Image (cartoon, rainbow, N blue to C red; front, side, top):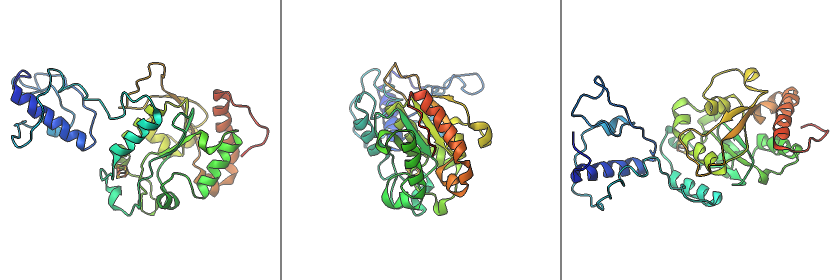
Length: 289
Ligand code: SF4
């Protein structure tokens, strides 16, 4: 096994990590060695993607600075927005990092643009849907169509304005025909949502619909079981620099598009929102959505 003291090995490792950064892969973990999985003499220090287990020969055509002793591993979990205290600036860095994203197949299935998210970077309340629809794809903003209008009314009924909250989706590109985003698409895109959450540090996240809820909570259950309670939520894989933020409370309610199809459920959604309002200390109005 090459030693970390070996400059060629360190350079090759740094180069490989930089390559993964360019792909948008930041999270690595250290695999514990064992007699079965890591026979003596094989590198085990860094391995989350299979490629990291390949031999790492130095590419002599690439010139990189000689890393300081711990620089190779410093930043394995580092992201561009880390150490940026202003949430608006941090969100911009995440958006820049996302770039003209081609990480999942949704980039080539008719999206017009990436729908990153909108709202107050300091919001106490965040709404998360499943993905952009046609109106959102056209305008580049989440929840701007009929469902968006209903969400605006829901926010207003809570005594807030749309610009007070932050709104995003699990996937940032429109699935063709408004189909449900697939597992691999959610898995690829949601780390960026997690980073948005880690930057905004909301007190409460409201998952709009079962798809958002299942992706955020990593549990599969009917809406009737998901609703009506708070879950403790800490964005997976993301890191916050604020030791005072211990994560958000997450509540689940119906997606506004579902409420448009079945307005009888608005009363149930209003109960969910009242639970959130109570937690946030918002005054409960007498009218409903
Ligand atoms: S859905 Fe997300 S991961 Fe997929 S291409 Fe769009 S921005 Fe990239």
